[in-house]
Image (cartoon, rainbow, N blue to C red; front, side, top):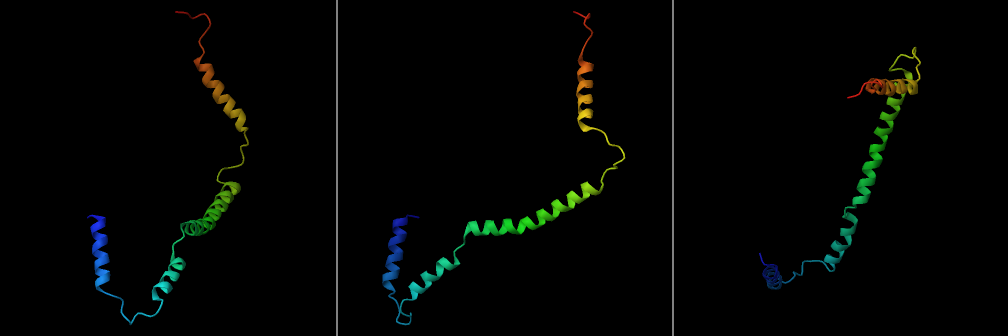
Length: 104
């Protein structure tokens, strides 16, 4: 629909129906003054949601920390992780090496 035609129709309808005397004085100003109070603030909603989400996140973190500290794995074998990684990498490198005398 053409916006200019719609505008003309709405203005014509408003002019055909003048304001009634039953409408209190400055009614529209009071309504307009109430609108900013009810406006939705997107940043405030995000902040509220993030604060509400922080509590469960902290609880989950504490539960997982306690679980990892108090023993999901037996502590009888204490091996050096860096040594295991070195052995794994070197084992892969040793299998790829060919004897020096083998040529094409």
